[in-house]
Image 1: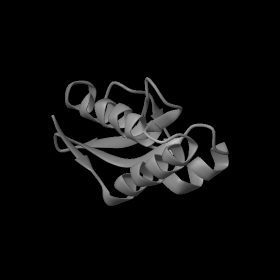
Image 2: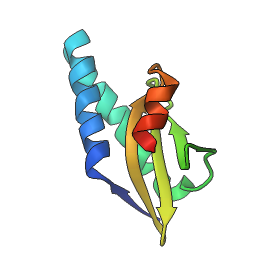
Image 3: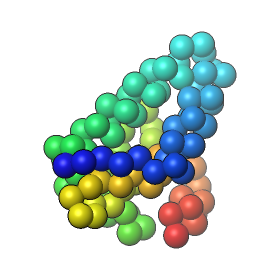
Amino acid sequence: MKVQVLEDAVADLADGFRFYERQVEGLGDFFLDSLWSDIHSLRLYAGVHSVHHGYHRLLSKRVPFAVYYRVENGTARVRAVLDCRRDPNRIANRLS
């Protein structure tokens, strides 16, 4: 399966990188490596994750983030990469 990361999701990854890099130098790289690994796993596992707010939700294995995507025409389109510690209403609003 193909994986397409939409512009909003790339911006989410950049925001997460900056947040973690402010905590400890190098932690931003760990964050990106972890999330990109999760996103690349969609090549094999897209569509098996539970649906939340109209999107499949892949929970990251290493950081408290979720990857929200839809499968359309053989492509997993990643719409958002969001912090699970955020207000659930904010997540719902972002995905609507």
